[in-house]
Every structure is written in structure tokens, then in C-alpha cells.
Image 1 (tube, rainbow, N blue to C red):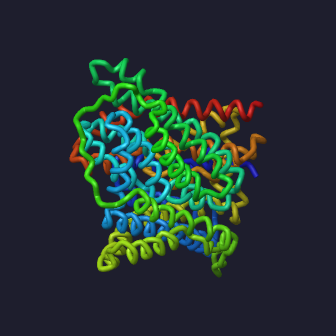
Image 2: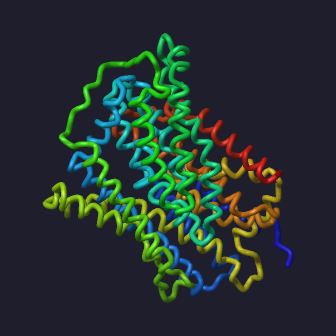
Length: 500
């Protein structure tokens, strides 16, 4: 059956409307998602002639997918609230910051290592919001603190929020090869601390000397996160960012203590006295280690157990959900360190923080399900996703894919939503070109993580916590070049891998 160019254009319409409403009308992500979903449902029913029963099944399945992330975010925020109450996060900052008085070392430890760890646990703008005020406390201007916080809100995002971008964003498309390839491409992220250093010293009168003194330390800091993250990728999507950052922090702590690659001459903006919080290093580390033990153990015991939901076209809830494990860990920490009287307050805060992402991802997930399953129709047309993928028959796809992923994060503020938007399209486009799907999916995922540097929602959130207003243009300008270099390197690596 011949399909008119009008119908092909119609398949692209939801993406045009989505980006147009976000960038031109500047509506909230919830409103944009709801309006785009309504458009997709009308198109599927009227033009593709998809039966209402099938649309209902797609909608139900989409909401079930979002429930997965709802539980993860609730658990992560609850766990972080418990840690804040017991000053465990302050203790972590104290022990890392007291290793060196050099502000370059301190900033990289906070904006890179600590932020990567929080990204691994919670994601969704939480890391930058936690770390940016700490950078201001070191003596940085609010603008520079926001820029550095956003730079750190990147590499770990590929496996942020306990692997949500692949677990929820890619869903059934994800497999061990996608995770391994993404962790491999993610090693480009070792350059991020070098960019941090360059921006950090940019206004210094001796910026050339200060950069030369510390760039080996910056590159070392990047390598000792991305390499362990790659090595831990075989455990599953939940572990690269969490374990990579934990191992990286430990190595960086020990190597800095011994003076390895630490600048010979210490430099600082102002002398910062880190407040002792009465927590030894072991007591600070135990809550984090507890989470890791739960994650690894439950993955081994429950990783393959699913509960199929009737009427969902085969969707099954995985019994292994990191959200439960964060909740259990938080309760155990409260029982040991205190804060039980605040338990319900922590839970309320967690629900409040998780509700917004849940609504948006529900809407986006339903939209993607409808577009993907629109091929099950009486019109005889391919699905909307198949039509879009069919127009991308270019051997430059590996180079373009990271930029497409970054665009998704820039607009939506989420690696997960970017993966939801483009995952099926990338998979079909790669099949059409005879390229291994795991390579293209991994490139898109890593590109979306890099795009977190310029994500509008994260920019606004980071500005808010330090009292910065109407500086979005300056912030994006500060992170744009590092973001573009990152994406170009990832895309070129993809081209070489496919070409080879």
C-alpha cells in the first residue's frame, strides 16, 4: 500500500508539537506531555485506525512502566532524607574535603565524585541541587557553582537513578550488550573534570599555571570513575554509577592522601574549615555500603522474578526494584542512627518529589506505547515509529544519535524521558541500516547523559538552590562547548566502531 508524504509528515508531527510547545510556548513538561499524548491518540484512532481496545492496553502498559520509576524515586529520596537527617552527607563532604585545602581538588571531589554518586542513587536533578550550594560554600560565585554542578550532572546520568534510563527508558529494548556498550562509550566522560578545572580557573590571573598544575589530577579523577563503572557494568544497569563512584571516591581519597598527582602548590579561594560532624569515616560509609549489599544480593536472588499483570499485553513487574531496597536501607539506618520520629515526614517528602516525574513519565510512556503499537491497525500502515525510522537511512546515524539523545535531555530534563522518546526509533533505524541495535541505543543513552549538562529543568533547579535568577543564557553558554565536544567524541567513536 502506497503511503502519502502527508502521512509520513503526520508521523513526525508529535515530535514537532512537543518541541514547539516546550521551546516556543514554554509550557510545563506536564502540559506539553498531556497535549502531545492527546494528539497521538487522536492520530492513532482517526488516521491509523487503531482500535480503542488496543489504545487502552497501550495506555495501561505505559502507566505500569511509570510505576517502576515512581517506586525508585520514592525510595531514593527517602534514603537521602534519612542520610541528611543523620548528617551522613555532611560527614562524607567533611572527610573528602579535609584531605586537601586546594580548591581545585575540593571542587572536583564534590562536583564530580560526590555528584556522580548521588546521580547513581537518585538522579532527576537531585545531585546538582545537593552539590551546587556546597560549591558556593567553597567560595565560588553562584554562576560558576551552577555551571560546575551541571557539568557533573552528566556522565553518571547514563545509569542514574539506579539504572532508570535503561530499565524504564528502554524497557524491553535493553539488554546486557546495551549496558556494556553504554558503559564503554561513557568512558569519554573522563574529560569532564578537565573541563571543570578549566572553567574553575578561567577568571584567575594565573589560570594557565593553575590549570597546568592540576590537569593530571583532573584526568585521573575522571578515569577512576569511568573505568570502574565500565567494569561493574556486567552486574547490571543499577551498578555502574553507584559502584563506579564509590570505588572512585575511595581511590581518590587514598591517592590524594598520598599526594599522587595532587598539585604541589595548594591554592584556594578562601580557607574553608570543614565542620566535624562527629561521624568517623566508617560510620559515614556504612549506610552507602548497606545499599550496595542489598542491591547486589537482591539482584542475585530476585533479578529474574517477574509478576505479569493481566491486560497489559505481557508486561511484568520485576520483583527486584531498587526502590524497595532504598526504603529498607533507610529504615535500617534510622533504627541504627536515629530519625525514626521523622519517618513519615521523610516518606511524605519522597512522595512529593516522586509525583511530578511519575506523572510526566506516565504520559510520555503511554504516548510511546501508542506510537510503537500503532502498527496494529486496520489501515494497513506501519506504526508511526516505523515510518520515522524509515526516513533515517543514513550511515551517519552513529554520529547523529548522541546529539538526538542530548536534544531529548535538553528539552525534557531527563535521560529517561529522552530514552522513552527515541528508544524505539533508534532500534528500528539501526535494524534498517544493518547496524547492531545495542550500539545505537548505547550512543543515544550516553548522548542523553551528556545533554543533561544543558537540560533546562536542571538549569532552573540548580539556579533556584543558590538564589540565581534569569541567568539561563549565561549558564548554558558556560556548559555548551564541553557538551558539544563530549557528544562529538562519542559520535566519532560510534562511527569508528560501526565502520570497523
